[in-house]
Length: 78
Image (cartoon, rainbow, N blue to C red; front, side, top):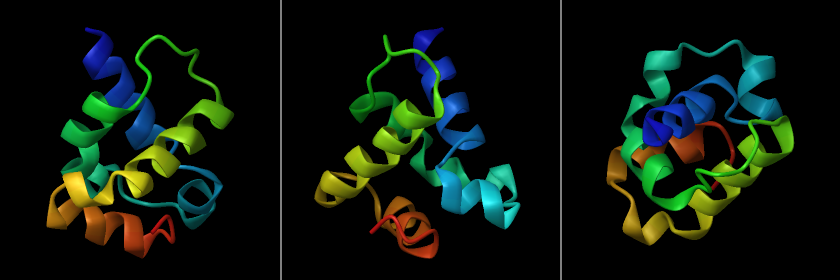
């Protein structure tokens, strides 16, 4: 359940860049498994924590799939 919450939070709030761009949520789906693995599942769902999740994915970009790295590049997180 917490994994789904983190993934949903990641999809809903990829950061200010994604929110301002009015993105399609299905566009972020390649990063759901990585967000569940690398992002803090116990943190409150705040915008700051959601941006931190995007930053963590960027730091761990070598460990995420190519499709997720493409999403990170597209939204200028990488």
